[in-house]
Image 1 (cartoon, protein in one colour):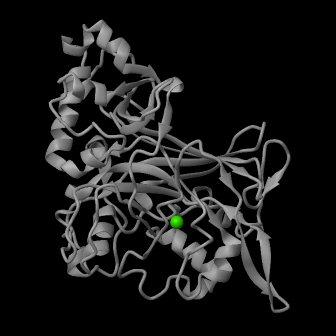
Image 2 (spheres, rainbow, N blue to C red):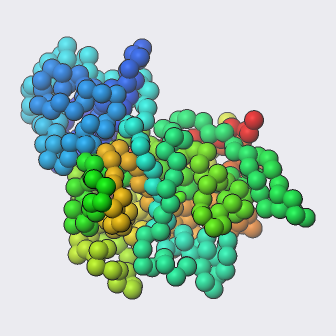
Length: 411
Ligand code: CA
């Protein structure tokens, strides 16, 4: 185990082995800066770079896009250098009291903002359990998976403009719902839901016409965040035929502020589910690209007690991140640094591991009992939805922190 001179509380999500990247507003500042989390602190990477301690020139802006664009060699050397500077044995930063005072902030005193200028957002649909559950609920339990599902990672192009960082409120959307007596309904969604997902940010851009092969995919994957793909099921059910999700999804997507790197999660790689039938060659890899990351979702009513409604794991994903990126680009679609690609709802095999309310309550037929005696079929106004994730093995814990968002009434 590595040790830092900066205290890291037991069970912290942010030991020196993690060092996730984010963008924060220091107290009283007007411009956000790149930072990393360690223990209960945030370290200002722009400041550290400016005084020549990092040896990089990627943190000058107000987003992490330039760092993402720099590619894996810079990501790896930057991370090693940061670990060196923060280690117990290294005096360069440790013994520079004035620098420490100017570059370290308590996490609760800073405001986290979106880590990147997100140009494009894609959402996959890669959990077999989720696709089977939703297929059963929206269509037919006998043919829940459509014929393409086992052959390619199904996805859709989402809306980047309405991605918000943890802590941002989400207003209940209004929209159309299925007609009664031939007239579509209109009003605030009555079936507002969350979707538990993990997303990755992409690295160096590719050119149009160029495919990212599955063996090179990891060179374009910078790191992960937790994603809540807010979903209005009544709007979705009426609009999704024939072109897929639209207003049922585009009103808001929340992400956690800290991007946990692929390097930090390396010890937690594991085999994914067996793929049968065997995918086409461009989707084949001998490497293990699933990750053992425990995930949970809690609902906290306004002024009430949080109740955990789901415990799942990222390793349940049928299609892995490299297959997703290889598929996304195989037709020549280019990517840019700072694109976000989300996994799709991560449901496990058991009822307690379903990653959305429509599955947990089986479309409202089996409501969740809350500690205050109320029940939930979907998300109520005033509820906060809180998602957490962490990987843990041999005393090492790498965490994501959380993504939370409170639902405000429609206006
Ligand atoms: Ca989704």
